[in-house]
Image 1 (spheres, rainbow, N blue to C red):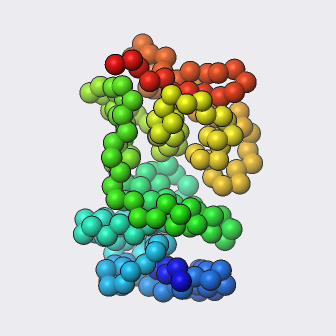
Image 2: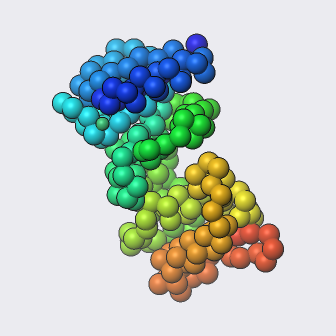
Length: 226
Ligand code: CA
């Protein structure tokens, strides 16, 4: 039995999440505020936590940070209210594994939840390094040499994806599936736009061309020769 903790103060949303998730076969506990959510998460073993951000008593960021500081690495899926990049960066900064933006469809939530469950418990991941490019997945920050790169959350996710597959060709389809939302049905040209932005931030200012375009197949992050 997969056990979930839902920390959500909106009564109707909490109830519908419980109903929907139980119908999918999950065992669900619901906590109505941050302090109670923290207590539940400390006292019981859950397979994943769905954590709202705006909560009475203690907000979701603090719950998340506290758990991580105590070495509790239960996968956390944050329910963010806004679609500003800042919220999502804060969610990931505080130690969440992923987020969904309210209002979300139950199917999207379920897909994200299954994805964090599949990944299971991930202790703070090690830095990714490709040449002098370093990405710290826990702090959501990337640097080239001594310079911190001014990347948005999405750009950082794209860079992370390329770094995890350094030296390999990745297709637009793979990028779409891994960096964009599940079921994203927008214009795939968005990826070219983001690749161009990334180049303007991580390559061009440094006189580099590490992100290669392979016509008709995709992109590759070049691994510099040692
Ligand atoms: Ca709330």
